[in-house]
Length: 119
Image (cartoon, rainbow, N blue to C red):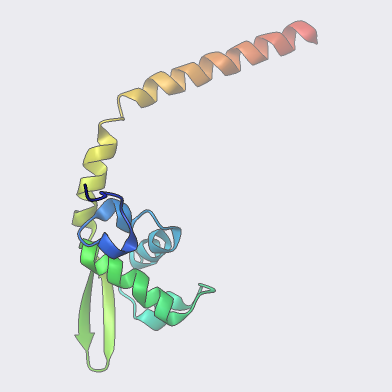
């Protein structure tokens, strides 16, 4: 039986695998500011430009990034609509958030009450 385990080698088309790596998330954060070349994207990172290109390749394959060639430069842009798959998955859990926040509030109230009783 073949493995369904995700790797960078079979990440094509999978937005979840594409955003799983922190460098790729940071690239998406930078592209949210506007289109950039590989050189511009690579500036803040302490990894090689080829490594940035490899991450961009995965983002391209997943559809989260588009590329436009202008002269000798390639400009990358984020394709935010393709993040909808992630949003749809996360939205299933939104109903749990108020409950967890209520639990946190109850816990903090309990801590405050204990602190007041001691002091």
